[in-house]
Length: 408
Image: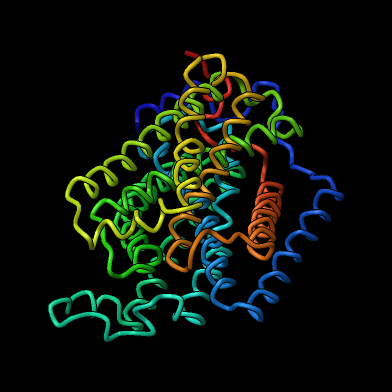
């Protein structure tokens, strides 16, 4: 890696084209921002109204919305970190997109912290600590409210601090072109990858699996990671294509970038399905009542339709659509597949979070729909603000020219 950096600098590849043109700043349409603000306010109003009508459902929807957004932010940060650690140069030109996506982490963290601190009784173990037997002493200790809250704060702060540091170094490099910032981000990225592997695993157990404390799965965290990354890749694809169409990345994004993003989406969609099947098959095969209860709740009645639809949105559609090379290189086709995957990610979270609260079939009300729409609008507003506050691509990165002329 050090040799590659030195070689790039020595050959004059310092992230600026030979004509000296630098990346411009993004200026989004004001009407678009007004619409997004209106939808965001509507989402907040829906939460307030929902909390007054049915507090449990409103706070559950807030947990789902916040987990969705923080998943986008963490996936984007992980995407950046992997590129730094592996020395991959192909994505440098489009790196400002995942950097801007990662800006949603602090805001989504506020939503998760609010649920844990203000409404902990959405978790059955919080309202009924006596539900655990004497034999389950460790589970009782692990799911004690003070320890649970302290862990949540630790997870959130560690993610915010490291992700902000990586983005800050990347943007400071625009002004100086100092390769020291690349070296700093390589070290920070290695730290983030290791820390993320542990903290997101535990956060998945804490925030999602403990909604059904009588159930457990040893690969649940891996399943959540697969969903997080495939949903995050879809979000990166959508916003990268948007930025190309709106102008900031026009002439920067090429078919090779799209091809690699499409291959990653194809691969991790299949990985998601592999983990989904592994968890389901092992629980079905052993047929232990304390494990099968999870799936029984999700295959009965109307839940069964959503259960099957989940597989189609997250794997069948992207697998079949992305098999041809042409689809992965076509921005219009690729973005449509990414929309389907984001819808699948939302449905997957709904199945994980809503089913424990349901009495009977799924009940998707206007409150939940408006809150999801509002949270996505908030996500786009945060993305737009973060993207417009920096150059559209990292002009000081030593591998920018290599990325702009990337081909296989």
